[in-house]
Image (cartoon, rainbow, N blue to C red):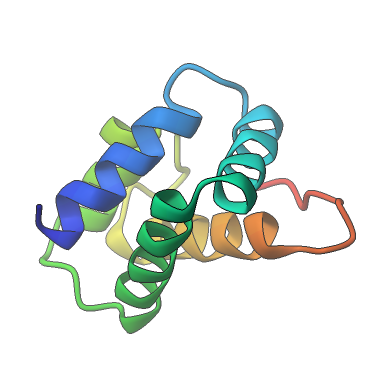
Length: 99
């Protein structure tokens, strides 16, 4: 499975049919309780933070994978959404910063 497919699967699983807050909570729970999800999460974070997805992929991940709406509909804004999602999942205080 490619990194893109892995990220898309993760976003679809946790955000496509859930509200943002619920998706964050469910992702946190799955990462903490499932070793495979935890290992996949490390790979997902590394790929997103490297900002080296192909053109159009970040936007597709957010629109189609996570089913989220962006204001600018650009890869740059999609990376901002993805980075905030990572930050929220990794927060230890339990809070969620809205996008």
